[in-house]
Length: 337
Image (cartoon, rainbow, N blue to C red; front, side, top):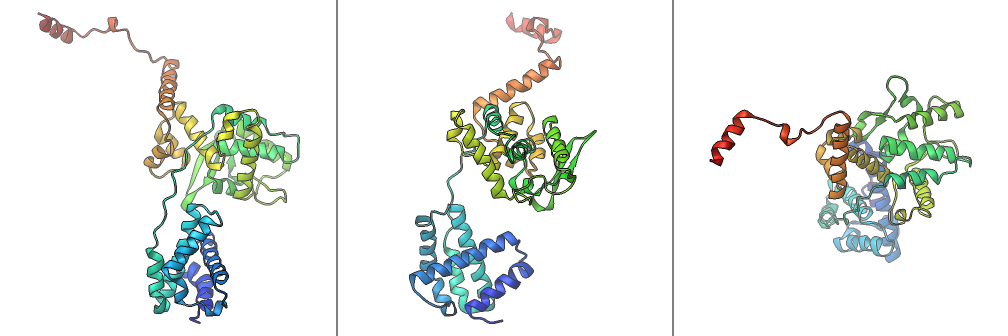
């Protein structure tokens, strides 16, 4: 192995990351981007050849200045800043393992603290806001119907954006059980049952396209839609709907917003936390509890909805005058004497 910086980086990217560390392609791309950006920044600060880069280029102060540059001048988010830090630490950990002169650089990089991002607002759409998004879609226009399908199925299934990207037509089952198999995190999958609304839309999609297999959501080129493509479509129609529904102007709508909205609406309609947990694909019910961090007013509505369901099923509360327990009544009389 060539132990110059270019040689170490090449081995890290082509051999170590996937074959030895088991990184996913997405993680490797993110970490390589961190090193690439760091190298470009160093060359801007002090012109040099890549072959001249050595452990002294990775001092704690230089890495800290680079991260500040990302935040203050490039405007990256705190999670992205932390990812860039993680990429540099990962590379230096590998370099120190095969070339001990990088040991101090690795320790310096690791000593830089991970920043805590501000807790994001856990907003969700009301039914009226969600309906407004659907009504803003002109299905007569090119891609209108496919966008209507996307918004509807994303909400109905509460799928994560990566799960939605992976959805295929052959994952849907119709008939006795109208459902879809969703492939989630860690190669796990779950069955989610569909509303009649979504069933009609997916079946119509199959009839219109003549396809029974392949991606459910397509881009303009006919390929599988990306997560950024899905995010763009949702923001587009949230913006359109906000012209008539003013409350949408204060909300940032993303795939996760639809997921949280569906879960919150289930809670408000009386669904139990274990049911919502299974629907969302959460391993721990604590995740579901934190996910559904809603106010006391919404919780009161959930209780009222559950009570309404019980009443409709014929469960009533007896009048106090109808309640008699001879033993308790005797004790009450004795106390009253």
